[in-house]
Figure 1 (cartoon, helix red, strand yellow):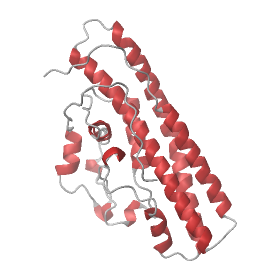
Figure 2 (spheres, one colour):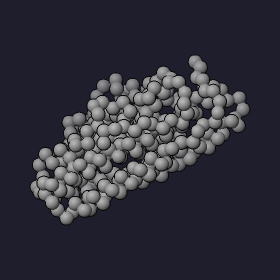
Figure 3 (tube, helix red, strand yellow):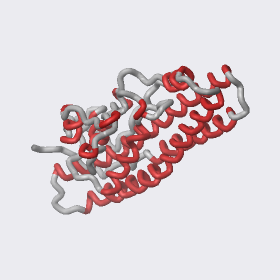
Figure 4 (cartoon, rainbow, N blue to C red):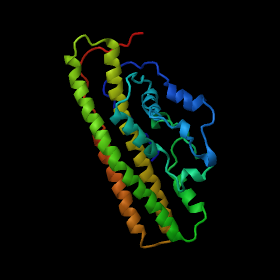
Length: 260
């Protein structure tokens, strides 16, 4: 599944200069953040360590991130999004030399293009005691994803619900400055794009898992393949449901111009 779905914007407007957040600059330019055995150092973990996800989501399509501070719910949503937007791996990241925390490009400008065969090739090529252990590893990876989706979906639904209220309140705020309005709408765009980002990554994961399962069935047929197929189908369904959640309401009318 190499095609990348076009993001759904809350409103149409001219592209604005991308705001590079301090957190993103720290991640990209701050040197090695790795501790022993490739683990992220404790002093690198901060409350807003995933704030860059919003800036990357909007910046990837030429829009500017909001300057507003994150709410607790928005912060939680970004924290929960990170493990879901990582590429699927057939082994834990800490087993890799490159297993340390790092920013990820949004799917709308990701290079190189997504390779749905990468997960399966790694799963098949890595030594296992038996083909059954490969099936079990695949099943466990899908189950882990399904376990993470529910809390993310709950939090994302709450964030988008509050964004609808934020959007409806804009016309009632007296003396709303252009910058305040722009930041409010930009934050709604950020939140919606993050949910769309996660949804696309879940679709990619499901595609990767299905490719791997099909190769395992060809190489070593096993009755346990039916369990894997059922779980992958559930992951595909959850990804589709998340896509429905990410459809935003149109913002209140009015020109949005950022000054300064």
